[in-house]
Image 1 (cartoon, rainbow, N blue to C red):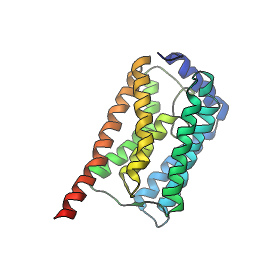
Image 2: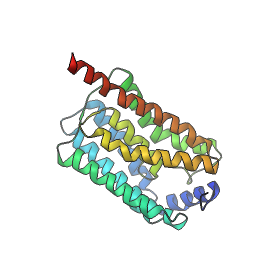
Image 3: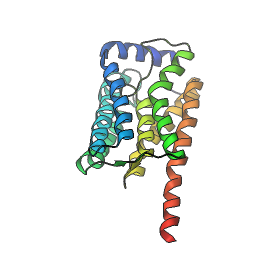
Image 4: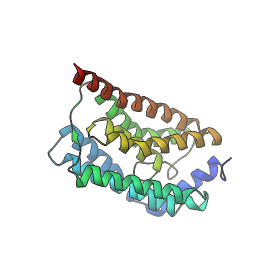
Length: 217
C-alpha cells in the first residue's frame, strides 16, 4: 500500500505546478529543442542534449522529489538521490566525454524514438486531461519524473553511445516504479504509458543484437 491516493498525488501536482510556474514553458521549449537537435544532428548536438537532460533530471530530483513529493511519501528522498545519480551519469557520458552521436534513423528505431519523445512531452498531459484532471495537475517533461524518464528513453533510442544501456537503467526502473504505483492507485493512464516504455526498451535492445551478428560475420 502507498501512503497516499491518486487524488492526493494529483493535488500535490497541482500545488507543485502553481508554485513553479512558468518553468513549465521553459521545459516545453527545451523538449522541442532536444528533438530539433537530434533531427538536425549538429556537431554539438550530443553535448547540448546532455545538458538539457541533466537539467531535467536535477529539477525533478530537487524541486519535485525533495521539496514536494517528500510531503506525502517517505521514500521521496531515496528517489531524489536516484534522480541525482542519473543526472551525474548523463553529465559524465553525454557532456564531459563529448556527447553521443545522433543519426537520422529512417527505420523502426527512429520512428519509435521520436514517438516515445512526443508521448513523453504531450501524451502524459493529454492522458491526465482525459482522466478528468485539468491544469495545473498535469505532468510534464522536466517537471514530473515520469515524462522525464520516458523522454530520456526515447532520446537514447536515437543515440549512439557506449553507455546508453547504463543510461536507461534508472529511467526504466522509475517507469517500473510508476507502473506499480499506477496499478495500486488505479491510474490506467500510466499503465498505457508503461506499454510505450516496454516497446521502446525492446527496440533499444534489438539493434545491439543485430550489430553483434554483423560483427561476427
